[in-house]
Length: 178
Image 1 (cartoon, one colour):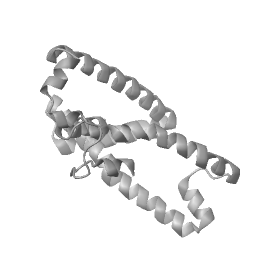
Image 2: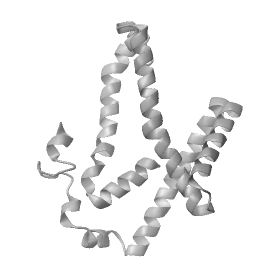
Image 3: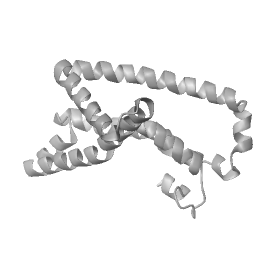
Image 4: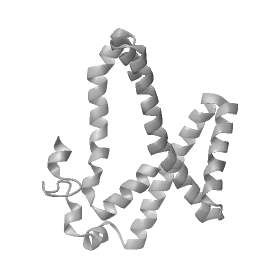
């Protein structure tokens, strides 16, 4: 959800070039699967920290795991909690910190009580809700603005290009291709 909101904001500010990450990610995942999956299967390694331990040492594995944990909490979890707290604030008037604390408690409780099964069911439900909500938002938005053609009338010409010039501050095409 934070990626959806962030990409929509960046897209309205910069243009279509911000979608390159979404277009290229399936290709990268396929390439990783073709090149690294056979290696992982032949060595019996399932995670990157496990590979680092086998290749170097246990302290490297612990360091990498801790680094990823800190980075994930500070970049992903905090943004998701803040976004959820803002939604609770805007829809129910709940204070930001109380909303974030409530989300942490609710998530922790259903994860501890229901285990991975609860987490998986929640992910499946969230996927359905996000796809349905995105499609409804698209339909309502298109109806409100008058259709697909109206988008291109109101959008600056520079926003419709997937490739920006090398001098572009945010998304030069050279950076996208490399």
